[in-house]
Amino acid sequence: MFRILALLLLRVVVATEEACSSELDAASLLQAQAKKAGSWRSDMPVVTDVQKSFGEIQESPVVLVAPADTLPPNSYMTLTQHMQGIQRLQKSSYFAVPGNSEMSEVLMVKVGDDSTNAALASNLGGAPSSETKIASVLKIEKEFSHAGGISVWGDYLIVGAEKKCPISNWCGEASRVYVYDVSDPEKPKQMKSVIERPTTSAGASAMVEVDGGFVVLVGGWDSKELDFYKSSDLDSGFSKIATWKKEELLADAGMDANFGKYQNLNIVKQADGKLFLIGTTHDGTPGIGNHWADLFSLEVGDSRVSITKVASRKFQAKETDFLAGAGIFVADEQSLMLYSVPFNLKTGFIVTSSSAETDISVRGSGQLSSENGALGLP
Image 1: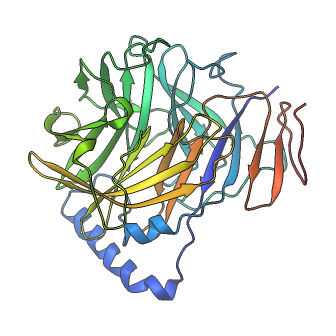
Image 2 (image 1 turned 180 degrees about the vertical axis):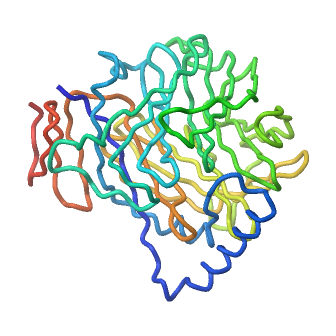
């Protein structure tokens, strides 16, 4: 009997070629110049207009599924064993999904055999193909047993691991932040530099390439505080440059000044060099409430950080949960996508695709079907 990992894809509506060709040329030129200067270590698209692309992400989901039968029995089935985020890797159909079972780890989930950044169509309607599977499991460590929210920049994945997560206290006694080269998703390689955080958690981590080096942010408990670090090459160490607190948040006219309990954060670079931060959260208890993605402009100086809220959007997410894990994917200069996962794996459940106007039953046998009307579990 298969257990199913549901991935929720919220796809962007792409503008017409005529409307954006000049902007695409400008973005491509800037990216080519950056690569020539040696400041780009991997192909990571920069976005022509981040606010515009963020506003065009579709609210209704496309449902993807993958069998999880290769995992140990009973893993990811309880409150203390859960998934914590999701990131699609560049130019592939691999997804990195952090979580904790007996130790902190990242599941490398393969959904089909696509080798581009194109949107993935729903694979419902039959049993998953042989190319849809848990391809590998990146084991991090046992002492720091809880993996936090992750982010990917090009070929690099960043993930925090938190020490002990008892029900009464959850996480936060101490943490470490690791970076991996995931150019081969089934054989990740750990970079030499590790961020030690002996007195605080690492619930969400993000990174961006700037001026030939890297800027990393690590969110503490519920991202109330964000610590910022710099590294020249991910192997020679990190230096802390600033700490930002949610009370310092600025807001554009007409925007609220609420900085949510973000379980996942992503940094997106615009073609003109400006940085944006996207946080995903859920404003209620699991299964109740609304799922949100908030957009912020981000300015990082030598010792100071400024964050301004510029947009906020509500999304549909049934059977998955932004409080469990969600993540932005930069497909190209115009397109952003948003993925989400549930807290736990299940032997069978119902998910709903509002865009298809049907209820989609995912049965424990691994046979998938789409039918009109409500469907009960086997």
